[in-house]
Length: 377
Ligand code: GLA
Image: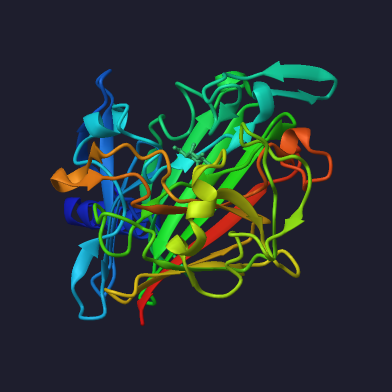
């Protein structure tokens, strides 16, 4: 004699299944295939959209913004971020950090050297005579991250994670990185960066998107108007390493404390080491919360981009080294045809005792938020 008859048994199984499905965490969707790297690793693409037609496409290689559609004052959508059609484009030497996250340490480290805990570290010299944007092969813009869809109070998003092993690109510590992009209906693209380490190590992450608000591929960015919330900047030597001074922007071509066309005094910067704007601005801030950093406006289309950050600085780079390479949709990216607003710590902070530290200790967590907001005027 059985204690339970077949229909009751089936009902119990169904009930257990229902309870399991109810209690299990919501499945996180994978991205769509976006092709493969040269060594055959699949790359995925995630798409964020909001009710105003803003579209952000992100790939798992380097957590890269591959496409960014925003409306102009007539409601016309255009892609405003430089990029490529496929993974091969991103793997080619036409790619100058388009749309990716740079690190472990964004920007330059003098001669690729730093000393930590009594030990000297030598990193790759990939921007002679210095180290730039984390290295050459396994820097964060080149590795394949794991992507997952997430829902947060900041809107639907994609969380990318990557664990960089101790010694990767010469940096100490096993470091767990997370970069989460979310898009809300206020047209705010929020980027939350986090890192944890098991050994003291320098961390300075940044988003390296190149913007042209007239549409990626438009001939110049010098016709855009720029405002920066920065009374000071960090002057650099001939190799773009800070001298250690913090100088006022007043009475220099770098004074964007009031809205000004980028091209205004640009000729005064062309024959300098930076060949244009390629400077770290020290943000005017009180406290360590989100602070307004920059506003970029294109008068013709009315498109406006603002950047807010929790970081002490913003590297403003006017695409002085763009080479006229072919990019997405057959567009050409001329020299100075885009602007990067890279929120971050100051360059070469590992060797500059007077700058805020970029050393992450094992018991702490690196956090950085950057919000790019899109509107029209
Ligand atoms: C950064 C640097 C520039 C340049 C670009 C990449 O923004 O500040 O000097 O190296 O990256 O081409």
